[in-house]
Length: 258
Image (cartoon, rainbow, N blue to C red; front, side, top):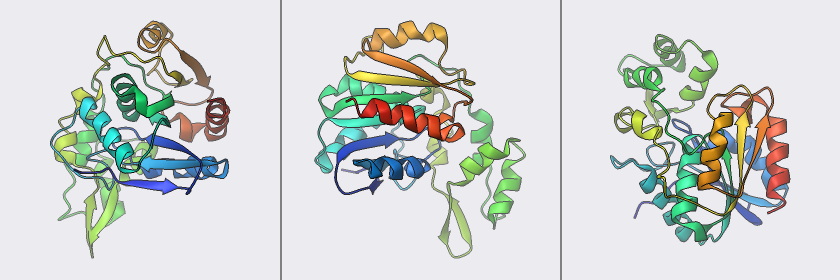
């Protein structure tokens, strides 16, 4: 059985697992994890399959991603964990909470709703798919290549964190782009209508993001009747990076009540 790679911050305290978004990795959350560790949490920064340092597989659905977390919890002997998921990681976590409720104590969803989304990563996936590592020899080369598809430098910097030196002088991507480039539609998949969880949970929206709309409250409450909602001001979809202090404070305050 393949077990997901993780970076565990801390050696004691309440277990908090964090699930990153599409094309991200657990270490994107390292700054927050160190702060939560100092407050008495043991934080598991998990790389989901086909991302980061975790294994690659052609099998890629939210049901499978949720089972990966179960296998991880069993391997590390974790029970009733606190959990936080951003974007795709939030979708994985919603599926986990509804299908395998005994593993979760309470959870936080960052800027994603249980609804279906239209595919919106195609240009990014095209750009990453066209990396030619016989020609790309430096990170600057990779950035120049990606800039043909993505004009936003911040997004490019985020994506280029997936580059690593596979061997001396040879760059590679930690992402399984051959699988992920065909997963754009799957990533936007909504939660099954009958999937529900009565866990205490918090949905956090970025004020400038359109991923969670006012009208989505009804679908959130349908699946998660005990959900609370809060908005992070001056932040878009990357709310934990765009307004980190506010995000950290509201998450910490909520976690400490659980």
